[in-house]
Length: 147
Image (tube, rainbow, N blue to C red; front, side, top):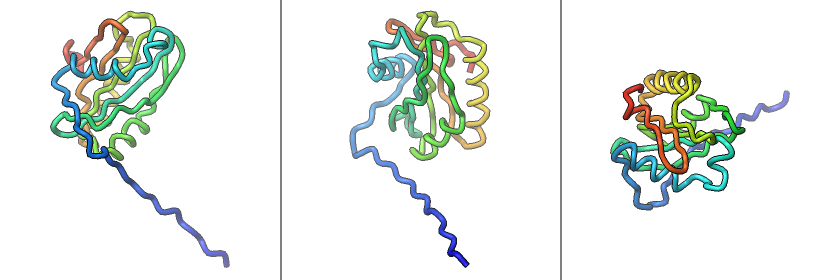
């Protein structure tokens, strides 16, 4: 009889001891997110990124989740929360760009946000905001009261 081998799962995460930036609101989140965006494609290709925060709203990191076409990108909730759990994040700020420059959220943007908020409640991971960015401005779901 052949011996069955089971893979061991290892989890590790380190911030490297670096000082952590603090998020104090949508504007500080936008500035930080924009600094991590490739300016050469912000008006060409839609991307989705997740800003991971600890309980004190200190930045643990930014995860580039997906890159799509000119009018959309795919977001897998399982990947969002697997990254959040691995980093021991307590809060998330969702973000994506609109290459068109239109800051208004689409119905799919609103639907995805509601879905991720509901999933986060089960894991005690709060979705703090969803920010739509362009090279010159942003739209915050939290500031607009639609979270």
